[in-house]
Image (cartoon, rainbow, N blue to C red; front, top):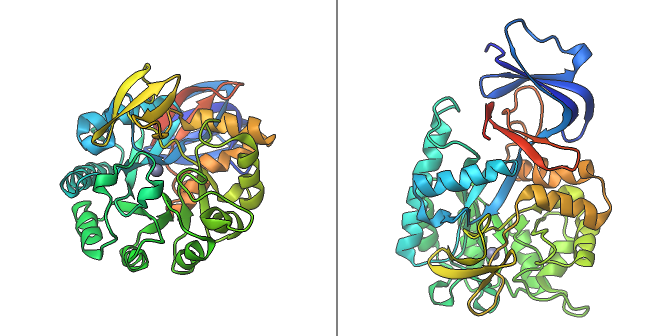
Amino acid sequence: MKTTKAILAGIIYTPSDVIENGVILIAGHRIAKVGPREQVKIPAGTTVIDNQDRLIVPGFIDMHIHGAAGHDLMEATTEAVSAVASYLARHGTTAYLATTVTASLDRTLHAARGLGEIIRASQSSHGASDKIAGAQPLGIHLEGPFLNAKKRGAHPVSQLRKPSVEIAERILDAADDTARIFTLAPELEGALTVLEYVRSRGLRVGIGHSNATFEEAERAIAAGATHAVHVYNAMRPFMHRDSGIIGAVLTDNRVTAELICDGVHVEIPAIQLLVKAKGIERVILVSDSSSGAGMPDGNYRLGNFTVHVAGGVCRTVEGNLAGSTITLDAALRNLASFTGLSYQQCLPCATLNPARILGLEEQKGVIAAGADADLAILDRNHYVTQTYVRGRPAL
Ligand SMILES: [Zn+2]
């Protein structure tokens, strides 16, 4: 395909390599070539976009997001998904997993069906005729309904269910096989049977909203759970003679760990401990944001209930934290400042690491020939000035 754009950059983090005075050639929705300017010839007739005073990094991937900009993804409409997609793009996020919250089975099936259709449509359009501008939905993250009532966080207790293969099957069918992650509490009776079933359907299993002991969490990991959602939050507390699910997540290399890095959900020493224990390559920054993200203080929806945002902190009426209002651009700046690691060292946590979990590391989360042209363009302080989603400017 013909090269259509050449983007000049002061610095490119691929993220593993640093290219100074670089250029990215884009053909259609893909990256055709990337390298230092003296080594990459720009074909005649190409539109040249000058970002020589900017840093270019892969677009961010948010694996756990419920909503933003006044919309909850459970609405499962083009309008709601469009609002979230353009909000995410403004913050450098170019791809995400639309995440459900526990609700009645009817509502969950409705959301899975609606989101499944939107995701299928975005996959078939090859980037040329997308109906929805902004970040691209890569699939669904099902959070619930098989969660532990003791660690439910914002998930409504009345809708939590005992693990059931039949219910899981109905939800996965409704989603038309667009679900990618299924999060459950592994200690519940029947959870391991559901775990094996959803794995057989090709999903990754996340553990969370859980009161599991170390042994119960390890049994789930041995059975194939590979991911832990918003680590520390809504988990049995870590005690030195009862290290629980957190003990398993911190010490078992088979598990990747989500982190809400807003400085509210997890305090800084616990973040440092997580990064030391897991290594930066197994930490995944997520927003877990709800419809109140990007909105003034007030009341918003999370699934079927009301949450209250005050000073950027989102809580249920009972006072439980109910997701964040953060975006991944800010989470990355926080992670670098909280850990003392460089921005480039932290970058995989929002790019390559989530892409790997989704099996998309050739296509997403990297700046390389053949990958999708998903780019975040940043100023010196790592604030987003422009975003490209599959070769198209999103701002
Ligand atoms: Zn959650």
